[in-house]
Picture (tube, rainbow, N blue to C red):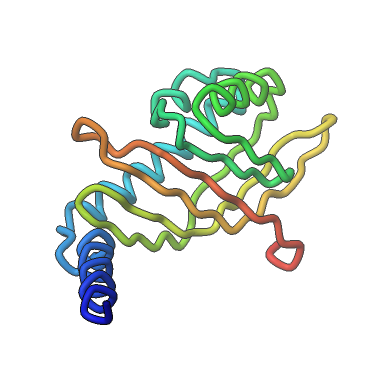
Length: 159
């Protein structure tokens, strides 16, 4: 019994380690993820003008996607997230948000980007500063990096 437990533990650690190992990730993968983060913000800024199309293109359309936004949203699955982008586009918040200090960890099929989002939106005719800690998780689908998770935290001391 003890051999089986040890063997199973070693096997699980080996599988998990190969799945998460970023040491073999090509520099191109990290650069591709940084580009994907910039594309996400380009699409976000288009969304602020009322067009959800580019944002929807960047996301995986799978049911395991998650969105946790700065207003406390927690949306699970592509259907809910797609609807969320439509609702946010209707708000036409204007303004612009950019990614700063991007840190990427990438494997051949999964990647995570941690960074700061800064900028502003227009709410009720007034400019509102945006300052968020952000994490985006990507999965490579058919050779393209697609967003499968987005999480932001609003922290007043970052403003």
